Image 1 (cartoon, rainbow, N blue to C red):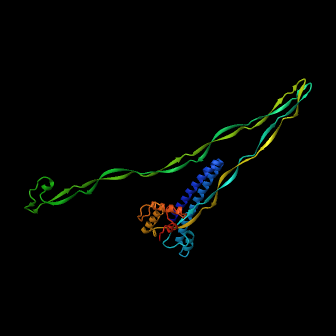
Image 2: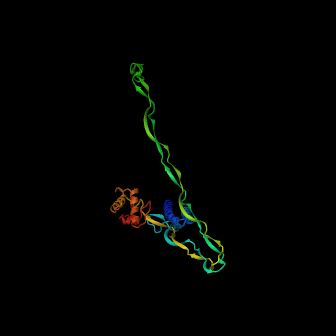
Image 3: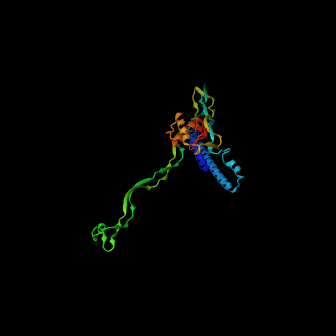
Length: 380
């Protein structure tokens, strides 16, 4: 029983952890890309493995405890019980051992979005015109910037990996009709003329002059009744359904060819009157482009998983009167707990756990804690 409670608690913690990781994972993928997604998937697998290891360890401890308890004397039993069972347990009380999942918080972290780079700026040559008789303009060179070429590409990004779900196929039934024997065929001795039973008169009187009365052995046929019943045609079964992976297509701009420069020759010019002379040649200047940073959300673990004993209501104190008190109190608090009939059904259990969750009290999917019972006015 304790292993089943621990297993259920660990399964609930696994579902909660995976749900939380999936939500945070989608936000992180959108911010940081494939590398962060792989990191989140690895963290989820690590957490699942850790919880499964915890469950196996607890089951192994419980099995060892049972084996040791059967072999040890009554003197060694209290020390073992103190380790594997609730501390300070009282008679007539029930306890559930539950796994409190780890707590996480989100923090903002500054990450590099674009590295520091340089931009090349061309300073053209400076000339002046003078009067000469031969050379008008000396030969020179000019630097020309060839801009970078970019291309927009589409890239598919995995949002949710392929998985499988178990689908339940209900049983089918059919109606069959068959004859059921009520009484079997038999023979009985009847007093009287044989003809009255056999259908024809072969003895005229029920009395004989020789022996007195006539006795006939008569066959009484079996009696049958036709009944209709429903039988299973196909039993209930399950099947595994594959859920395909989900992808998002994103567009990004990539550099096909980086920016370059090329040198163009400017030939000399000649004339008879005016000449343009080079004062300062063409030059280039490098301009530093600072790096760009952005904020991303990072999920950090605040506390580890831990096991805790909780006192819960059980058959001893869940009397019909207590259940009616519970149902009445929940109804007065505005929770739909079903009819006030003294029977603990799923609707009453769900309403009690909703009340405990709203009040910040401990709660579980298949039990009611004493803290919630105290708030609702139960006596036990």
